[in-house]
Length: 113
Image 1 (cartoon, one colour):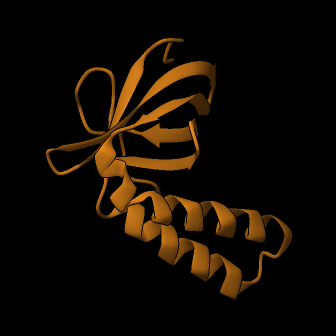
Image 2 (cartoon, rainbow, N blue to C red; image 1 turned 60 degrees about the vertical axis):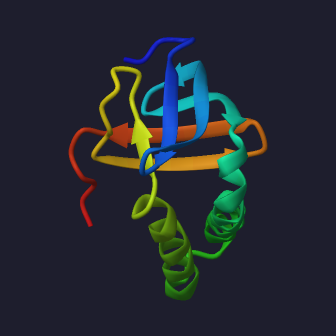
């Protein structure tokens, strides 16, 4: 179980986009403070769109709403990497970022489709 104070990194290739410092480990979700690097600006709109669509599917779980969220999140998960405090990329993750708040879950194995 991750500990308070651990630092996770969000990367695109070799570029550091930001770091998440864990403030509340509440398995399976981890909550933390997100500190963005300048490079994060290039992907910030992806997270804003994903967060909006995730809130929509909380009220409207229609196939269309879910498909829209999956497409938006696919842009994140297919191009960005979440790096654990050990320096290893995780196989799968679900990450939400809202300003300097971040919450995520992760696994060493890919999530089931």
